[in-house]
Image (cartoon, rainbow, N blue to C red; front, side, top):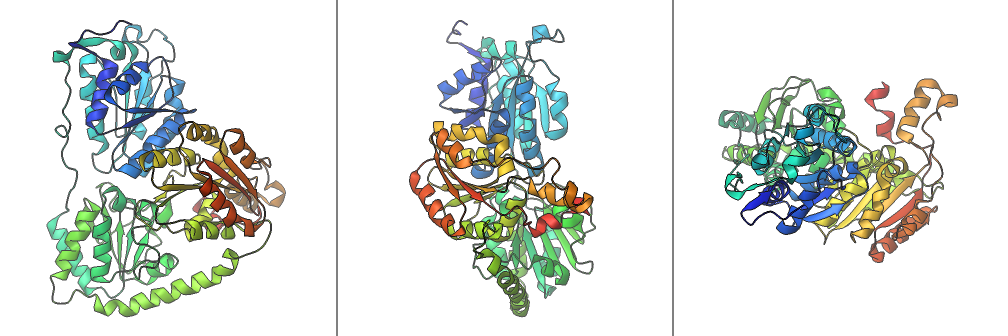
Length: 560
């Protein structure tokens, strides 16, 4: 290729300029001949290029980067199998409402429908799992359509977009004057909607007259960076709060309004239930887990989510933080906002919470070997700090952790989301450590989950991105194993779900990281400390009891 003239610009450089305008400072990628001009543009624009070993990891990392930073993430992959490998990461971001752009290569337009290398109908494949999918038709339009794709990421609830760029479009150069290059901050509007004022007043009325309210703070509280407003809301109105998804950590453990283990009791007994940024999907029993006599309010960025699967008494579409702040202000303007009369309700829930904790505590302190998974997640919970970003990547073992591990700061919990994708862990750790290098990153893996994308542990070593990986190793896909045995009997409970006894600690050392094996529960904490002190990507291989299942596993709706 010849260098473009000074007044010319290539398609790859136009991509990089559009990424820079969006504030993106890194792309996650796996190389291919269709896309290398984007790399050249990124070098000129000062955008880092992190190259991974599997395109699924690139897409998951772009998703994770968006969750951590509040900016959209970007992954760049080649055509054909490069793009299809990334489909799982895009689908996960779609269900998790995570804004990211996947750019895929494509054969030259001049060879359209001729059977060029790696040619596939990418746009047709990506349309159902993105908010926007398109082909860039000309070099002049490259930056314009990249900016359009980012704009569509924020249409309603956030989500992913996809662009394919034909090789001749990407490699060609055009006069700078002919290329449309949208300017930073001038091609999309604010997405912060404050909600219908009349609906806010109705919510305030419900709050003032409620004796037993509760609120579930979901992922959109963090997505909208509404943490402070949510905290002010629950404290000003004395409302007990439960948290799920990325909403975990909104309130720190020990806060008088922070509740976790009494959620089912609260949903049965409350007279007002406010669901913020959480759909009535399988995690909520499709809405059936809420009292039929309570007033139910749903707040969401997406109109289509409100009232889906369950009737509600009030729905408000908009930004979680703005709506909670407005509702608190409207209720606090009344002579009596109802806060004082909720003291007994708070005490009632705290008693239920304490009883549940004390019932489970012997398991969390168990000295049994093989190790009780409750003991492992207890040690992790005791180990993490206010600066630890916690990531869960697995089935049964992560279900245990959801009951016990409590992040101590907002935005410090990451899990796949409602698609339930295994294999996000290394990618999320990569994105988190890149975006927040001063934070500690700890990821709990199931051994099956780590096996899916674990080779990118080497990428963490190569880019010097230290993190603490803990593998709850039971040599099984235990969440599936439980349902299989329950449905078909113990004699068929081991079909298709049993793994080898893999020494992941040795795998870590082989790739240049820190590795340690743990069989005694008393050794868990010292091993975690040594991993922290190593300053390397680390894997602590903890052998856990394969015949112990999390309550959430045993209660899964798919087995009912």
